[in-house]
Each structure stands twice: as C-alpha cells, then as structure tokens.
Image: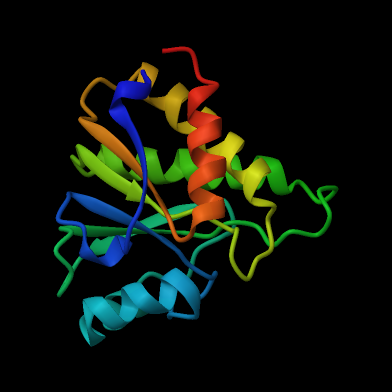
Length: 172
C-alpha cells in the first residue's frame, strides 16, 4: 500500500499531475498559504470558476480545472480550524481527505497531490494531521487500484518528518 503513497517537500503548484488539492476556505475565493499560492499560479480564471461553485462546507470537496497550473484539475477541500480537538476536528479532517479522493475518483483522476490540510493558519497539530491523512489515504487506496499514486506534499521539514513517520507506521 505505501508504495503508492509518496511524501516529499515541494511547491505543490509546480506538479504536473492529474490533480492537486487546495486547502481552501469555505468561500473558495482564495486566501493565504497554499490556497493563495494555488490561486496566484492558476491565474484569474480559477477564481472565476470558483465563483460558480457556491462555496464548500468543511470536510467536503469540489473540483475545478487547473487553468495555468501544470496540474489538470484542482480539488478544493475545506479542512477544519483547530479548536483544541473537542470540536469534531479529527472527523472533519478525515472527511476532507476522503471527499477529495472521492471527487478525484468520480473525475478520472489517477495521480493526486495533497498539501498538509489545516496545518497552516488553521492550526491543526501537524503530527495528528499527518496520522489522519496517511490513515485516510491508505484506507481509500485499498479499494481503489485505479490510483497510480498519491503524493503528500509538505511545506517544511517538520511536516515532512511527521508525514514520513506516519507513513512508516502503515503496514506495507
């Protein structure tokens, strides 16, 4: 299983794959962090397409074209804001990964890259987020052989370390 999951540090906006996942806010109209970087790299057409989607609930996902990105599609998902762990954050983060993969499957995506959803300004602890992300991706891949690979793209050394550690805990 882990042979189809890769963890590395990179700029997600540079990846030439079927889809990259955007850690978006519920408006889908751009923001900071990876969301802002994706919108800047994709160009104004992405914002125009996002305006037609009517936003997105926390834990859900929607798809657009990649526009000026090397990726064909952008899957926008809204992760939870961390409020200490007692506000259903774990389940909502798991849902964000799962729904992104479901949307990917429905749209013929075979290669996909995720950022570390909710670990930036939303404050989700990176170690906890990494375990949830890896668990959800590995479980989904078990029943979906059509995925060639899933990339977990980290923005710094700490995230890389936590995601690599979480992946090493998955039976191979």
